[in-house]
Image 1 (spheres, rainbow over the protein chains, first blue to last red):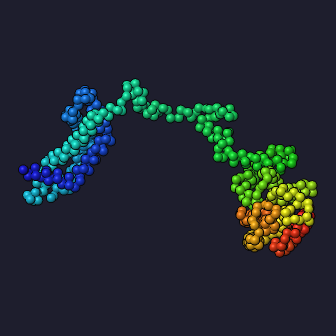
Image 2: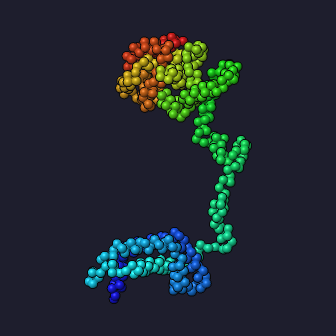
Length: 96
Length: 352
């Protein structure tokens, strides 16, 4: 495993251990609901389901349809804020 | 471990940024997956499309987004300027004033009874105090605002005679009301302000044969306790059985004690109560009533009030007579009422 990879693993581990990851996750979820991202995506889900037929929809279908659209639909403000927080965390806890 | 020696300073900023981006996209993907799982479960459980109905209803209840209108499409103050017809008085009333008007119109609100009582009281006053219609008109013409102020002030300072509190306290003061005459008597009492000197002898006799007639020192009001159970008691001054007249005579006796201060009256009452402990406490039964019996009657009710009301007295004219009575009546309390009767009667002769 390269140093870089080790580095990343270490940081991820720290992120989880300190509970920061959970906090970030909750923050993101709240912001997405607030800005209407969730409703938009749900409407898209409905279309996909109607398309594929109610009985035969699978998780994979949904995932492949939804995820790229979801990524694209995240508003910039939310993205910026989250990145800011992540960088702050990295800066704080870079020295091991 | 090898990691211990490492620090991020080894990583350049781009790599740091990449790292941050990766973390971010992980988080976003988590969110998307969460949504997918939720939707899939809803589909399989069958509740995904529950909030949808037929197209028609959907259109009916669609969210409205126009200015000046709420999301249901209703205008805010649509009913403000409309007028309603009152079913009671058949007048056309503005919508916002309709409810209070109806309250007063039907006489069912909290304040409507108070206002009605006030009107009755003031109309009583007006009727009794206005001897001459012309004078009144002149007054009204000359100083409308001043006159109304005067009347308004008068009304405010007057206590409402029919208010529940007052009638309650009176009940306590006068003991049992007994007959249905009493409400009328109260009205008569308060509105005229009894002055024995102004009443003629016939009126006085008729008044005193039916009521106690003792004027309260504190409130200047006449005791309207009914004497009906023993109508003959006043006439027969000497005809004393223990049965007759004791109720009335005992009340006369109290007249003398009016000069006593409240503390004294309490103590004197206590002493009479002690003397009565032997006698059975009955309410208004002539057989057991004596001076002390009167106290016993009032005992269960509010104490000081009973003494004041029953005693009443001291209009200025009667004060001298009552003071003379005080010496007589205090020792008399423990003796039988026969002795006190003549003195009580004499005081009323003086009044007449």
